[in-house]
Image 1 (tube, rainbow, N blue to C red):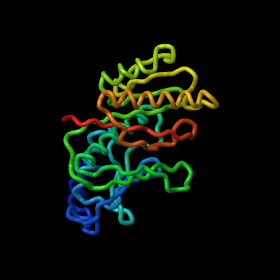
Image 2: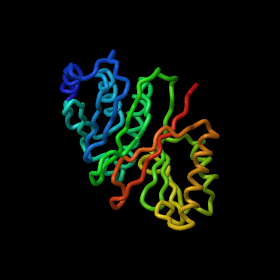
Image 3: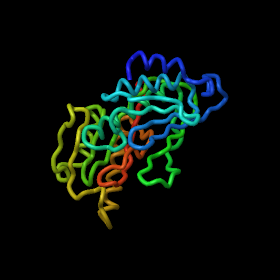
Image 4: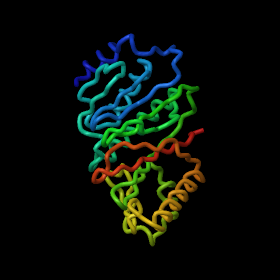
Length: 245
């Protein structure tokens, strides 16, 4: 889609969509099929801001956008919700950008929930409108395949602290991936498919990670199922936030 077409779309969103002054204080975002994002009950000004966030963070851009059954739909070039290869990282970078854009407009996630029985469905994100906050930073944590932990957009102090929490004995190897967009740990013992007592151990280690993030001023903002994942399995991605005040 050309830049001219995007400008036309940004000024041609139907009056049926909520206005900025709407009394509606809840809206939602859905991740549909393998290549679509829909905004439901967001005002036109917010839709424009989300478009800018997508174009700034998704390298392949948008194929199309339109009103859809009362929602507003963006169709991507590529398949961000399949979560394979570099797109598995890029889709999380893009979602961070969208969440950040909404957050700084005062739209806060109150729930990420699964209300569909469709196979390979993804989470519905429910937002509530509040007062726009101070400038806030985000990073993401993804749990990949059976044994990989990725820190996406995390500052070095977080990476270093996670190295200490996991410990050298539990790290098979670690490296930057995809032009240093994400830092990846490959772990021993396949923690994401662990069973019996090892499952309990892996959950305890996740709690240690949350304590680690909190000690550095970060908090878990949302846990979202973005994709079908490895071999059809589902794992959430964590999105963490910290005020820059």
